[in-house]
Image (cartoon, rainbow, N blue to C red; front, side):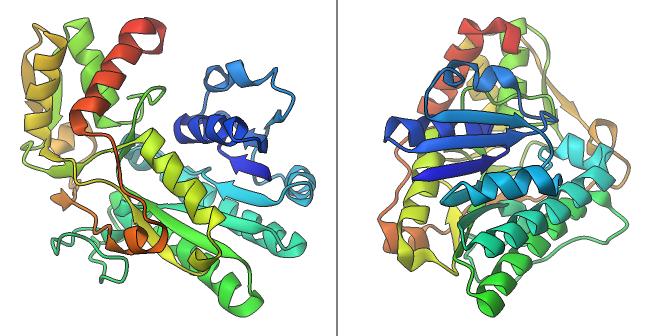
Length: 324
């Protein structure tokens, strides 16, 4: 298989590229390096079945060539991280909506298989857990940029299914729940790499809000395994699937666990949302996926525990202090 990965120099994209190459596929990635890093794929650049273009997916000339030469597109390119979303709302909306439209338009032109990476943010402030793919969505007002990411990814999903319904495009949507692991940076607000970095440096471990927010965390290798299996299965075309884990924990408990596992002298400090992000910031109180649909479709289950995940991330930053 010849695979194109948008956002392929990013955290998830680089792990996906590795997995595809390991099983014998050819991989080409495109990334504008806004949040991705060349270091993530540096070890792949000499591989005979790997190529990279440093360019935006909004460049239709480049994208047309790449799509025409692939069999399947893993569309991971997106604005990511709460801090980026809040501080760059225009970039968030344009990257997510216009970028996805470009991918779908060209995939339809060349009749390519597509997987769209969406997000658990889609569910908004709903507290009907676990979240199922057909659940209603509850979001805050449009005056709060926090929700622009969820809405832009919802438009991505609408576009994907419009292309499937009207033009029979072979597309699948995967809603990712807090994927974490080596190479992820805390720069844009990702909680585990941020806290691990703070703990290893002996800096205060910052908990935003009350810390009572409940999250589930999925190891990147589990996520990659799900994405590949979803694309490989013809039965998943035209469907949405949660990709997550039942590794649930409150954020304040997570801070204490990271402090313990790193044997860090750091104190745990609570920071109000309006100080961490912006006045009026809203967050999701709980985020837990229902995995029955993906389990029934492809037999996928996450294999890594939260302790496994934290151990891997801690070891990564200890071995790569420059990445902190």
